[in-house]
Length: 127
Image (cartoon, rainbow, N blue to C red; front, side, top):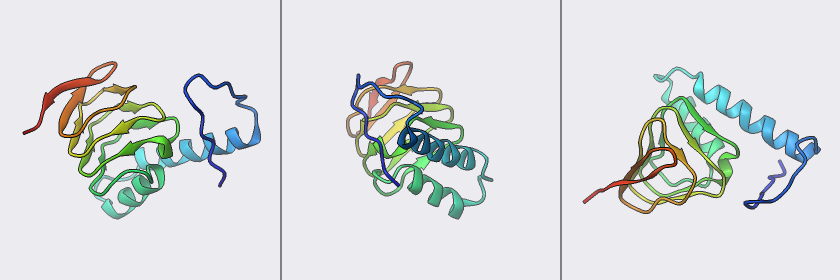
């Protein structure tokens, strides 16, 4: 699968075959993840890994989760994303981070924090 990396401000045509295929892959993974039984932890873990391969160990995404390109999300160890979170591409999330429910992450989040809001910002540092 050819990955389409777009930099902030880049123009692209949604009808280009690579863009369409990439978008469809992400939407399909998101649909499957958001509709998988929470008790089916094996399937959910595999879908999270397929969706966000650049994230560290112990990643936990709570459905409903949204992103435009999951492979553009870089997160460290012990990342937890609460319900109804949206993450934009090329965002780096540090280690030991919790993203609050309903947040829209538009910029990098440092290590050991709780972040939330629209757009998400650091709400509390974790000791």
